[in-house]
Length: 333
Image (cartoon, rainbow, N blue to C red; front, side, top):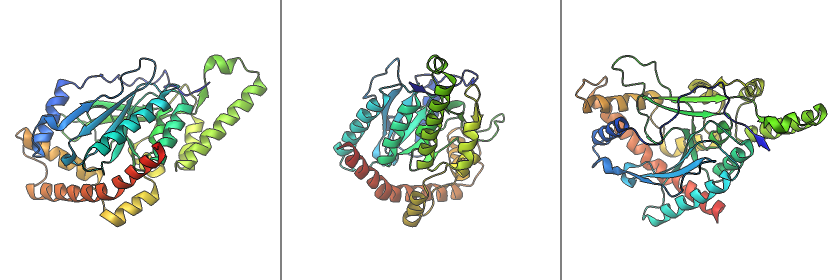
C-alpha cells in the first residue's frame, strides 16, 4: 500500500476539535463589525460523523447573504476509503445547494491535515479538480483568527493543489504585542512520497527500485496535471521522507498559484479581488473598531475596500460559483 504520512520530525501543535471560546468571541466581533445580524450567521452542519481511523469530513455553511458559500472541511489523516467519504460529502453539499433558492453557492475545500495515503489524496484531488472546487489551508474557525494554527503536510499537499483557485499559507507578519495583523499560522510542508516501511523493507533492492520509480512517475504526472511548477516538484522529490520542506506563501504563489485560465477568466469578468495586504488591513480595521482601538486605516479607505470586496464576491458568485455547481452536477450524476 502506498502511503505518505506526516513526518515524525514535524512538531506543529495539534488543533482542538472544538472552536475555542476566544475564537467564538473574535468571530462574533468580526460578524458585528461587518454589520451582520448576529453570531447565528455561522451554521455548523456535520453531515458526516467523525471516523477515528480516517479523515473527518464536515460541511459548514455561512448564511448566503454573507457571500461565502459552502465549505467542506477535511481534517485528520487521509486513509483508504476517504475518497468515498469525500464523494458522499460532496453529494450532500450539492443537495444543500439545490435546496436553496440561490443555487450559485460556491464550494471551498478547507484542509487541515498531516497527510496520509497518497493514492487517496490523488483520487480526492482529481475529484476536486473535476468539480472545479477551490481549496485552502485552514481550520474550523473558517476566518483567519490570531493565535490559530492550521497545517497541510505531506500528502495533504496533493489535495491542496487540486483546487482551481487555491490558497497556500496565509501571508502573515511576525507577531508583535497588541498586533492584530498576524491572524493565523498556516503551515505548508512537503517531502517526497514513500511506501509504508514494513512493505518497502520486505522488497528486494531491484523490486524497491522499480516500485519507487513507479511511485515517483505517478506523483510527477499528477503534480504536472495540477499545474505545479517543475522547480517545486524537484524540491519536493529531493527532501527525504524523514524531513520536511516548509513552503512559504511567496513560493506557493509563484510555483502553484491559481489555475491561469480560471484566474484570467475571473479577472476579465469581475476585476481583481482584494490583495492579501488589503484583506489584512480590512480585517484589522474591523477588529480595531470592535475593540475600541484606533484603526490603522481611515474609515473612507475601509469603506472602499469593503465595497470592492462585495462587488467582486457578487460577480464571482454569478460566474465561477455557477460553473462550480454545473461541474458538480456533471461529476456526481
